Image 1 (spheres, rainbow, N blue to C red):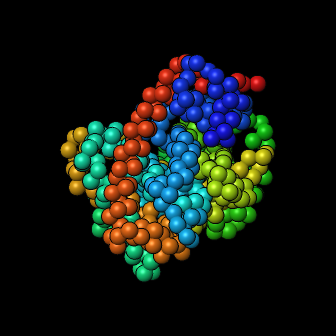
Image 2: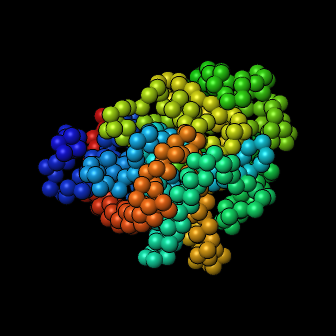
Image 3: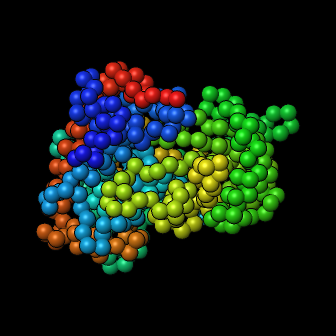
Length: 460
């Protein structure tokens, strides 16, 4: 227990009468994870904490390290965190929640997949299943759905995961949902249709740039701001290093003529303080960029930091740098072998960057929009069941790509062949996790009022 309390004591929270023990743990966990960002970009960290305090979904998105820290403290044989021989270190997405799922694209068009792999790492598959269940419960809570109806949605998630793991252990074909093909979820079908429409219209060009003085430039506003002189100077080196790591090869030099660049602000929740560079390039290239008059497309260089998953508490740390971790993990987990063709990675100025193309058609499962459509009657309870089954299958297929399907299946069916014991435990655990998340949000909001916008952390 001392190793969990020591960071709090060093921060000075252990003797703070304004915080109870759980509040001190929350504050200490958040500040410890963000300490270097608080020193370098305090205003952006304050913006992150403000956004987290705004509601349950935002708090879920920003507090993954707290969730995993709690799970890592379960040590008894009856712990509800699933793992087992050969299934302890499965490649995980790392932070499954509805707004990390959505529409993306490959050579055949739109498909449903995870769209953010920042937290990918190897670990016990049960941690991710439980995080997925909590994320679904959180979205339902935002929509005002609790109790037995919420339990049934989680049951559908668990059953589909168990069933798909069983199918994958027999080496059946992977599960992929595409636009234009029958889908198990109306919610996903409409999301893919919307993404395809935005992709066809090249919205990333029309929404984020303008034609001015005879050339195309990225817009300047509160979300797109001028680059610092340092990063302007580094642009040629960034592009050159990116091309060497680019998934489909270096391409032709004339395809990477830099037209403009900005710093993108205010995106995400957990990653809100992270550096994002948007670079507008032009030139002949394959794919949908050919549809724009001059072949313009936008690259995002997104800072990658240590994942929230506490790998060091399992006896190992993150291997390599975060740019490589995210790149390799993404390749391992993508639902399609031809999606994210422009994916790459760069380490520059001491910062790890994931690089990929900006696509407005890459749409997420927005929780607020989902709640509105449930309230209006556009979506019904059966649509939620279909969505939960699709998420369970997607998760299972991702875990099975590690060649761990049989090992996972043995854990799921150790007490009964249909995995009902595991599913029932997931329903109970996720309900408890939601109650704790709601309590933690309240404590976090109070801590911000008591300790200030940076939760009492000192800046240089």
